[in-house]
Amino acid sequence: MAINQAAPAKSKKELAKELGISRQSLYYKPKLPEKDLKLKAEIEKVMADNKAYGHKRISWALNINKKRALRVMKLFSLKPQRRRKRPEKPRDAGQAPMAIPNLVQGIIIDTPNIIWVSDFTYLPYYGKFVYLATLEDVFTRQVVGWEVSTRHNTDLVTQALLNALEHYPAPEIAHSDQGSEYRSETYLNLLKSFSIQPSMSQKASPWQNGHQESFYSGFKLELGHPECYPTLGELIEAMARQIHYYNNQRIHTALRCPPAVFAQRIALQKLTTAELNNQLTNRETAER
Image 1 (tube, rainbow, N blue to C red):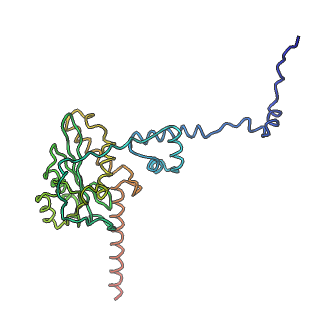
Image 2 (image 1 turned 120 degrees about the vertical axis):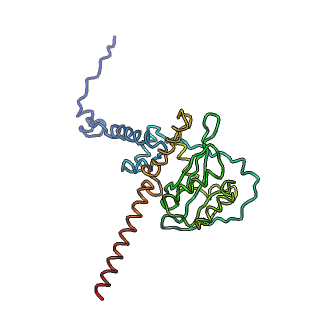
Image 3 (image 1 turned 90 degrees about the horizontal axis):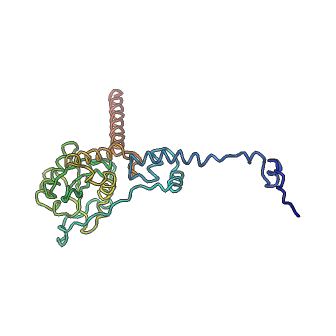
């Protein structure tokens, strides 16, 4: 009768030789999974405060390589919230195109307060709608003015413009779509009174007002569902906080910093340049 006996245990030296590796390799414990878990926690913390951040902005926030951020996000299925599709505006359907041209298409700017783009959006709230109108500086990407109302009319967009003009110099051009609010005589006369040229996207061409389209897409996503806020006052307060967050904390992909930080840098550069020019002028005057 044959008896099966267990093979004698091999030493680590014999096992390493059989596998064709060094004996030290048998003691190696990979560090990458541990690093990935640590980075996962850091990414989740950033995403908790910045719900729309993709791998690029997360890499900037954590000061890591974007490919590493993307790899870890894919490994642990970490995804930013999806953007909502923009709703239609039935009131504007069937209106004849305006004669006002698109003045901003292809234009290159290198300073603030040249072009402001404007639009409004609506938020569903307990069977009704709350409307938000904003104006954004194309160069700094700052939201320079905004207004909230339970009605989308001319007052909504004119008040947003007046709010912006309280804090910033009038731009050369104010761009919008061809919504009825921006086509109104009241709004166009207000622009004229501040020597602001009106500019409009072609009809049914939302990509020609892409800055505002992009802003609202991220704004709604990060605000969350409006009915999370029990009262209208709480909702408006949350919208104000979200605009402040966008201007002062949220990293803009085109700027690689928040818009307000970028605007401060530009203002400081201009101030420094002006001081240097004054010093040179004074020196030249003294030498004469």
